[in-house]
Length: 547
RNA sequence: GCGCCCGUAGCUCAGUAGGAUAGAGCAACAGACUUCUAAUCUGUGGGUCAGAGGUUCGAAUCCUCUCGGGCGCGCCA
Image 1 (cartoon, chains in turn green, orange):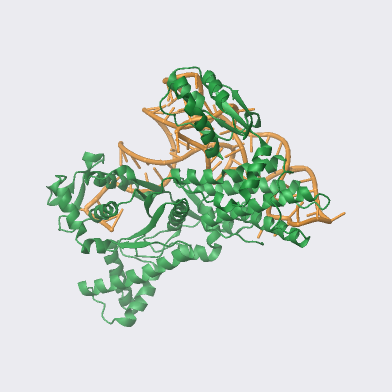
Image 2 (spheres, helix red, strand yellow):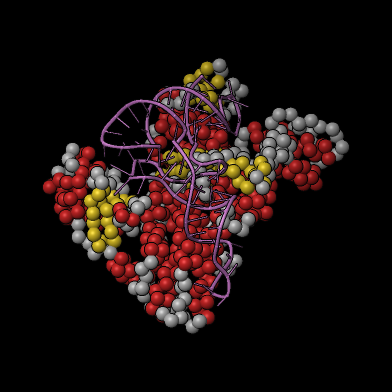
């Protein structure tokens, strides 16, 4: 809808370029005003042009308005300091809707004019333990964003980076060996850095079935590490799959080492003069690119740091030639952003092509009381446990009712609740109700699937609002893609549900003494149903026909 | 100490690429089921947008400072 209005304005504005004497249009907005008196849509273009051209905005608005003619608008007004307010011609909108209804699904699946190749990397959890609830949030945001970008016609690759090369994996191996010895009756200690979670005992039981000696030799540690990693990775993939998150690629840090890419990357940085030696370690001059301090890439003992392989990984990404890269990281990694961007710049790539989304912490609650978690002590609630208890839909929806950079309190009892407190039910209930009305209509002999697209009898405020919201759906998808804010979709659906439930309570869809009205409303419901379906599909949340 | 994020109604939060009188839900109170699902709806009350300056036609939104909270500041990953 907004795009249509923009098109109308701009196609009419071309003629005015010389008259108003401007080169390029400012970044103006089309918005839905909060107040009915200000029309159905409104734009600030005249005020922006005004300050740019140092002319009275109202004069400019006047010239613009005089030059716009379109059957979409009943009237166009100039208000306040220079707002242009558009009042839609509702009968023309109904006509528009009628023409649209045959291809309505296509309308809800708009395609971008310039498809891009996008790489989106998310979750990327260490394969040293099961996923926890915070990973679920990242997984939801990433998968929803990826799906929306894909549906807009972009070529999207979803990727999971496996940190399987460093000391954490080694510590997992050691932890398994210790637990094995413990299972044999030996008394063992666990120093800092080892994994204490109960799942390690399960891993140890499995491991000891196939192996007999648990001395911490390099060979055994590697064996146990590999064994543990593979099983844990299996858990992770399994959890993600049940969460409807499927990656195109799993890229292992170790494979980047083995291919020699880490060494080649370090060589390249060295050739460019961005490395130096200090305290017998090799440092990268990230301060030259805006970082607070320089960072080590090769340790005193000759091992490469995690950062070194991460640079190589990002080089690898850029070499694959995407137009745009998205990383979704937990907020505890924010200190890492600058150094990665520094490295990308140092390698000669355009760091603006990479955007890093920070996802804030999730605190788990049960009926208002916080559930304490400590990863070190192995005392944490896994994604699997919560998923089994509350289900995929509730979790995914809840994760998207906050913007990604605000912390989220996740209350298990709330997500299980079947009331308005729980937004997913509110939205799903709308869907169930729509289906219920359509069912009853069929029972009463209305051939819902085949009725002609007739909307003429719609004129209530609720109906107008629903129509404008439905017609705004494509705008919403572009907004989400542009701003990387998938939570806007949940808010859209909640808002839609509000309008719908209110409408539902105040009016009847099926009016046996007024066929035309009934058909008009059933037609609207059909479009609404498809819209809600589409929204829930993009969120990967179930759309139940009955509740 | 430095860096990032946050501070909006009693509570949980939207709104932040500057826009017109700041919005929802919950909680509180008062109402609506012989009618398409009351898992819903209607109404009432509730605000110094943490505070102070600044930028301008206009600031919750941008800038500076102060206060409060979270997270990070390894040759861990």
